[in-house]
Length: 395
Image (cartoon, rainbow, N blue to C red; front, side, top):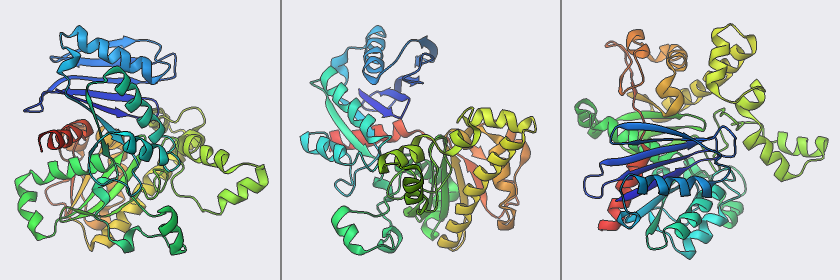
């Protein structure tokens, strides 16, 4: 069996897969780690449970997960490998890799580029190595899918010596999710045939974190998260695009260090700052539907940023065949999907309102006469990860 761990800033997703057919055996999500409201949702044989507990750290959560596995009659020595999603790799690794001391050092070296993610990714790796010392630990890197970008699309317009010295460049993130939904798209007969004719796709992964990828004939030509997972779209606690001159301005005016400003941009900005009460988009949508003026302004900002980059990537692709919507927000919020599609009517996009509000299962939400197809495809990063692990172990 394979255990897949997808650790985030306050949550961990787990899935246990059978080795040969990658059938899901168990799945869990631990949410609100560090909070008194933390809980574990898990599913075994289509039966769901919820366990409320004080998961004040990742070690406690991981120990609870292993106890849950044993309570289901599964022996820990049946787990052949543990896969870990790791956000940043710099230019050190392009493919999935078995974790050793060299890989651990490389992940640690990248902490300053993905401060919210890599530290937690590494912490979970080290905890698992201790709890499951005989089990292979494997890293799959979130930037790998975007490494088909051409140099003119990943180099910044700053002195080239800084790229040579520090590898300051655009990397692209959420690659596991973008790759999964793209592969799912082209399994559809209509798009599988068109793939040979330069299929032009924009995949939109919009959840707590958010990124957009422009994909032409299966290759990423641009991704909206660049050197770090902070850039471009407005996120729940991250600012997205700002004028870079704001950083030294704040440092001078507020007597802040670089680390303090970085913390503000990563953890105190985005929807969290705009709303103040909550960074959870669900709460903002509730307020928006009650005609709350500030919530309305926030939703407009949020949608406009998404639209801005869909427009930009359409130009980069020299037209567009399909928009794929995925991750928590675009899978579940018919309101955000509707607002995005309405502002793309100049592309000939026409939304089927009935399909849009029916639910968040996979399917096309554009009308039959829409010039650009719009599809919702729920992401499954854990399954994509399991496929990568299978390739490593069996090759």
